[in-house]
Image 1 (tube, rainbow, N blue to C red):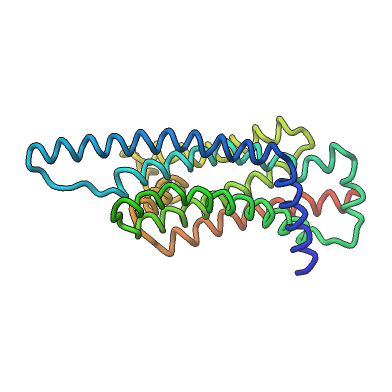
Image 2 (cartoon, helix red, strand yellow):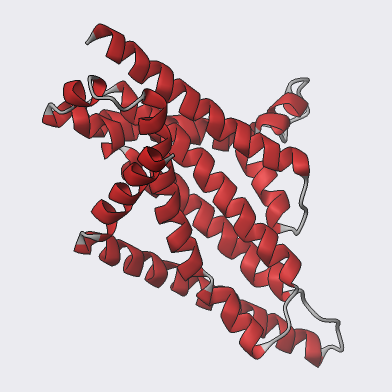
Length: 253
């Protein structure tokens, strides 16, 4: 366990030691801030219109935070393959993979340590994103349930994405190919949700394996144990596949 934590800590230090990391986080905050502002203005406009005509009230969590969570999930889809391309492929490119493979470290320690490192980075970013719902709590009384489940869904979704990004990185030393493979893996599971809306016989099956459909339930405030298990299993499979690839490379070396 100490070895895994050492690898995790090293991954965190490497990421936050670079000023690029802070620039990326700042840009994410800026982009999401724009969308958040637009959703907030649309909410205020709708409230004013409903007040004029004697209508009811809108759910702040669903009107503002639900599309906000959807934007973050889409950014994960784009950014995570780029974030994970160097995790394993960089070893091969720099020629350090042979030393790592012949070191006392086990493949399991390497994979879990690297994975926990990038998950910790993602978690730190999500903590920063809490500033947006915090604004709602300062000036209003939103429903905390969908916000909490929404962040939980983002964490589970991001962890699953990172696991498959790590797997893509283990397949090649080319960062471009690794990023492309990771994006293709994830986008295929993403678009399954569109196909599941058809009336075809396989629609139910596609809906079951759809990443986005399950995440959308989290943003509605629906916490289903099956959805949690799904994302954990998705991440576990990605890590297992990564371990198989690295173990086969260790045998060859």
